[in-house]
Length: 327
Image 1 (cartoon, rainbow, N blue to C red):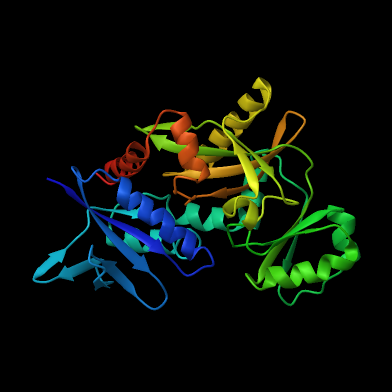
Image 2 (image 1 turned 45 degrees about the horizontal axis):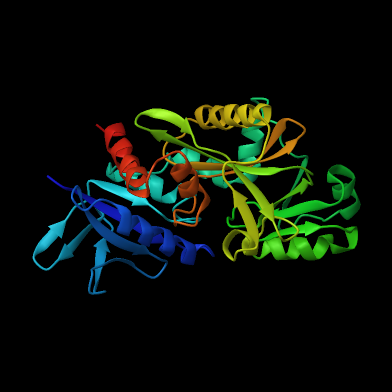
């Protein structure tokens, strides 16, 4: 019997448009011989299933079912394609875990932790994972520009603590520009992290549970045309993403080992894509995405293709791993 699969997409954040693209690709690529696939858009205003004729049916949030005519559809698994809130910060994970519905992303705690850059870095430091020097700042705190720069140096990055796709990120070259960068970041979150600049090759490493084994995908090198890997570089063609990365064998082994270690230390499930910058042969961890982009142009699907895994295989495996976890 075919499984009923809900693909959730949209969300509450600035990444909603990207999420809709990811969700549509998952919808198109999941093998229909095995799955009945339903597109479900989640926004602050509505939770709806959209049928092939673009007719909307509201989701019953008490049990995540949907009535279509006289039929009530329940779901065997949820494929999470929501980037940012509420799909990547633990809220949807907690909801589905309460309802005991399998889902393709990591657990509630892991999602909340990795979405909070400051907390994630602090946890990983205990496991000797190298990271940039950082300075936390909350809305309402006194901004001592000299103390900040004395700690992290120049240039530095000012980042919204809980945002993705480089929203709310500014590279600061002069102390006079620090306050405006802080103001920009506070438009996206009331918590910030200010980090030292790491000058080296940037790479992105996908890790997932594939056929019950933790698998590290081929590494992608990020070469941005802009000052850093910002929104334009990620989504508007202002970067070159080279898979496999042009790094030494030692660097490759080091970053694969570290990416797998982080995945296992955090007790992850589902997809993850972690960013690193090399200083010499040592990879410094930047952040982890637990619902990475899933379009054909996105990094993780390209890494999977390099490993010989098609999109259909990649997405179907995520569902089967999620269902198996709940048996």
